[in-house]
Length: 77
Picture (cartoon, rainbow, N blue to C red):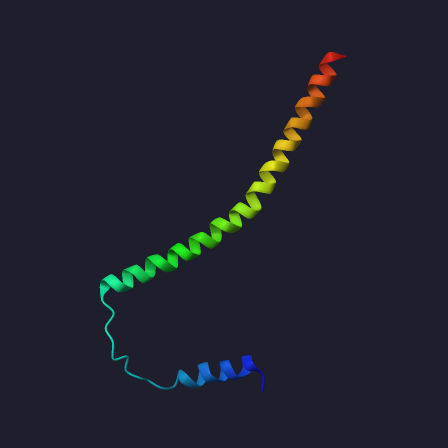
C-alpha cells in the first residue's frame, strides 16, 4: 500500500471519530494565526508576480528602446 493511500485512508478514517480538543484558542491567537497564514499566501503571490512581471517588463522596455532607436535612425535618413 502506497504512502499516499495510507494517508488518505487515515484521513477518511479519522473523520468518523469525534475527539475533544482539551485546549482553548483565544481570539488573540486565532487572529495571529489568520494574519500569519494570509501573510504567507500574499508572500507566495508576490513572489510569483515578481517572477512573471519583471521579465515581461524588461522585454517591453527592450522593444520600446529598439523601436525608439529605429525611429531615430530613420529620421536621420
